[in-house]
Length: 312
Image (tube, rainbow, N blue to C red; front, side, top):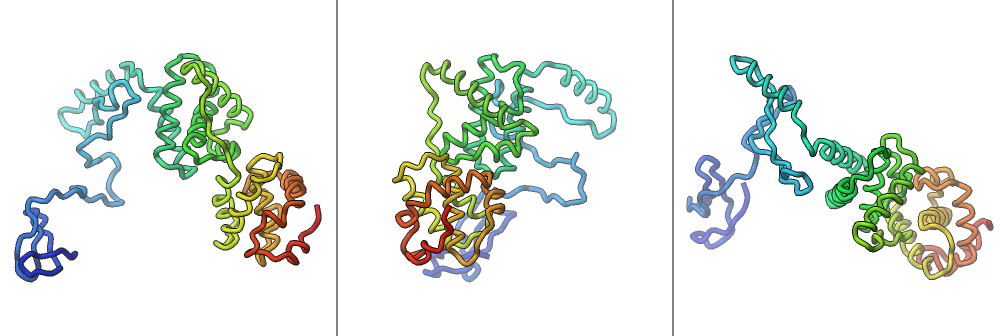
């Protein structure tokens, strides 16, 4: 039961929902507060031991404007036996033989959805990647290219455009065997094709070291205070001319923050969590070291603590 305001009782009272009539009734005076309510919950219950073939869903999925028929085509179900088995199976065979112009697109969208789920990306990034792939596919110039690398590159560009960037190494981990070099080539190809389509360069969005910080710190299991200090340090580091990639700077800042805390992390663990080589982290740390006193927040580490940092 839940609470609602009753006009007769002049106060909030517990209400009972009558599912058969669709009425919301006050439990104290019996007044019908709302009638003919629509129950938006599912009309069936699914149990673990039920067969997967018996799908009780009576409606299709949402429309997809990227498909020719909007994703609303009719699919003949598998027969469950009986007199209609021969007819249904025959129709099913003919349906499979028929050419579906969107079959390749549907498979590509499913692959993008799988990669997005494995990376924990939101639906807007997945939809943007689908849109990018559809625009490239419409130009009919991607035939013969590595499909997995192409889809992974679409996802990489979508992450950049939605200001939720992922490293190429992270994308590569879910790209079904596509290498970093193949994804990089596919990305350049897509940017070129979209540029030719629009007549102008494609906006990719700027990558900042802070975009990766919270995720990297979470991978290392750092506490909230250390995460906050790392985020502030990364923002201050942008004031200096440090010619390193944002990912390398993020990894080096994490290394400094952990060395100043009680929970020190070995360089190897930071390398695994960030995907940056240990040598690259050392070189980035060497570039950051002269500016440590201005980068690290005063509330996190004192001057004496900074002097205890190992010199590069």
